[in-house]
Image (cartoon, helix red, strand yellow):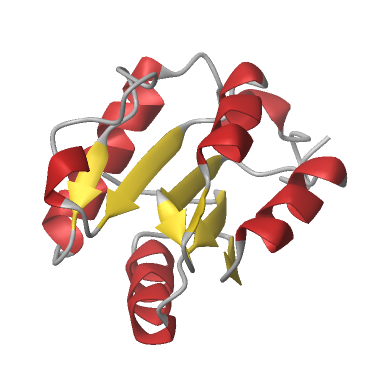
Length: 138
């Protein structure tokens, strides 16, 4: 699964894991990756209506649930992938049956497979929002 030209928001409270997710996205062609560590930062991104094509969200970041923020992003049509360190959430997060979940530890293949599923499940099409010649988001 390629992420060519995509703008990706990553919520991950473990710095090295966040850097690994950033690397995976960049190697897969992402235009930009915004790495944040707290749900408060996530809420600020939502409030600012920053334009992303995909969100990779840790279910619990520094002990705070990201599910309320995920619900708002889902309402806006943004494809989401959840990551989790909790075995109880590895097979799905209650209330989010269509959002793929990747359990830690994970590798590039698992992330890319989850991204492909999230994009397939979503009506969100990043290519349709690009300005033809410049490739900028409109």
